[in-house]
Amino acid sequence: MEAIISDCRNIKYANLPIRPHTVNILYGPNGVGKSTIAEAISARSRQASLASLTPYGSEQKPTVELTDISSVLLFNDSYIRLSLYQSDDHLLNNGMEVFVKTKGFVNAQERTRETLAKAAERFHTDESLKELLERIDAFLLTFGANPTTKQIAKTSPLMKSSIARGWVVERVPNAFEQFTPYINSENSQQWITWHGKGSPLVLDDTCPYYAAPLTDHDRATMRELDKTYGAKLLEHTVRVNTAFNEIRDCFSKSTQAEMDTFMKRMPERTNSNFELFERLRNDALYLQAKLRAISNLGFNLLWQQAL
Image (tube, rainbow, N blue to C red; front, side, top):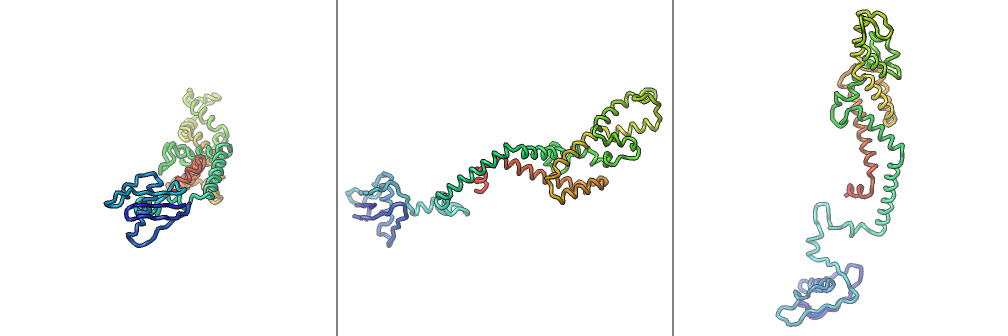
């Protein structure tokens, strides 16, 4: 390949060999016509006008002949201003295309894309992963409708359960000792609901269930029982215990041991006691976010994060 240049500014005639698909360097003292030659070759490759290259005061028209050259990328001052040092962290504009995006890179990129697509497909079709996410969601809902708030909501199932109210299910008060089998039974929720609905049916100090006389102590016990275990306390307690047990395996062995110790010790309610639950909630939120991110896993997402 060659370029033949005639009557371009101070270049009367030049015949330059050009190597294709590589960098061709023009070098020489200032004023010998390096920029003129580069501009002439670039203009002709783009089929642009050569009028700006007309020699001063000459009637000769500039001509440029290119043999087997269809495109030229010109690395001159204009390229440096437009392409180099565009920002503090980018040496070269579109440097990815220039330095990184080789054939090997493109092949690796496609293999990565296929691997991520298979991983995302498995997440959407794997029932165990779906079940895990559902269990985490159920656990977090025990902290309230918006479990991301800093403090545990007072209206949350956790705060309305036995855990937050003195462990009255796990540690039945002496006044209700005779009701322990009912409180700890699988049908405890139905039982306390039935008990609450039956209390207003007491007539003439007589038990509505087996028509036996009720003492003042019996009536006081009934009122306290409804007050202590009513308002869905047993329902919330069962929900919280179920949610905690189903997510238990997601935590480390040390955290599981800490949970077991806490549940067995059943401490009095203090702010420090809830630090454990706050940590469990934060860990569950982190795991939930990661699982949801996996469900949206894709090459484009990772590529954007990398950039």
